[in-house]
Image (cartoon, rainbow, N blue to C red; front, side):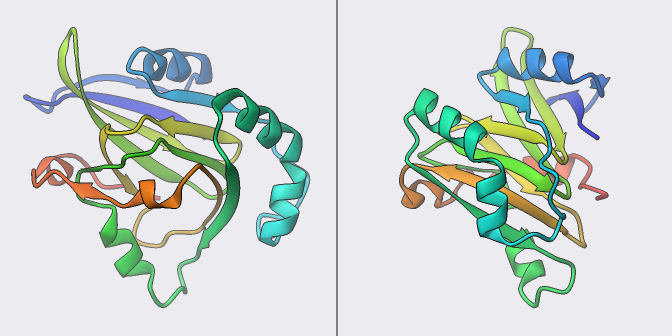
Length: 183
């Protein structure tokens, strides 16, 4: 289930919680983040990467054509993965990327948490994404990602140049000031 929680970044006051996909998309669009839902393919959650890519090929091809992105792959992370803690820790601190970070969730969940300035002041947007959700975090946006202590997901990653995924840490404590994912 998709959910968006928004906080005032200075006071940590919660200003919005919604599970309405249209409202989530509108709120995120206002800060330049693309959010949409694709019909979930009728394949198992644990399908292999080739099956996942093939199942979503019509949506991926349209997305790639519309955005100019180059290609897509699949990443999976399960609670029994020997590097899960290190992989989680890598993205728990606030950082940016030089390329848009685009993820489509075939299975599982994860939280993209964005620290954005806007007309209402600094806000923190926690986009809890689940199966069928696509999110595109614009390049150079301050954010962090958390799939919880026991991550279990299969996501399609869309990119032009994988070097754009290198995290550039901001050095702030923002990510520690807001709730961690419970997924």
